[in-house]
Image 1 (tube, rainbow, N blue to C red):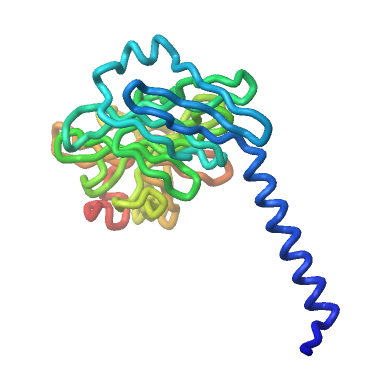
Image 2 (cartoon, helix red, strand yellow):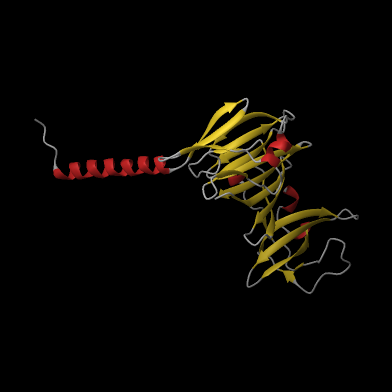
Length: 263
């Protein structure tokens, strides 16, 4: 008979207890079920009860006859599925509207996104990414969802244009603009930066300003690129942010920056 030493037994018990807790936690979460597609019927189940769920009347009035599929998917990562209504539309932009289950009110409510419904969405590392094609370029909005609240994290535009215009959203509703590298994966897009090569790079308030401000940068200063602009004279200008003792923003001539013409 094979003996099991005490340390192995302790590890085995800890392993079993851990997975028992995980299983118990999963059972304690409400589970949404799609009972019928026609007529549409949904219910919620937990470890002690189950009930049918009413669909929000205004919501259903807006999408009745517009959606062509409905399914349940946990897009928020909460362990509780959301109800996804895929709307009929073009092949390029396949958009959806989402209902989530409010445990406090035991009812279904719509997730509200600042750009309307999600399009071509995917779930990536805890984020919900919505992609929408305009012309030849793509725009993306990245969200976090917590307890029915949708928080915008990143808005990227002109994906496929060479450089991507990004807004990084703050909790107070403001945002920071920045240019990032062009990549299919939003997590791999990195800020575009450049070094000042001019001995004295004068800062302008705008590309059309007749005179520079009293501020300037010197050779070796590294700036973050925010935007490009070409003036009527043909000069290329770069909007920048420089963080030193303080933060300075303004416009520089592209010729004052290393490798600027390559962006």
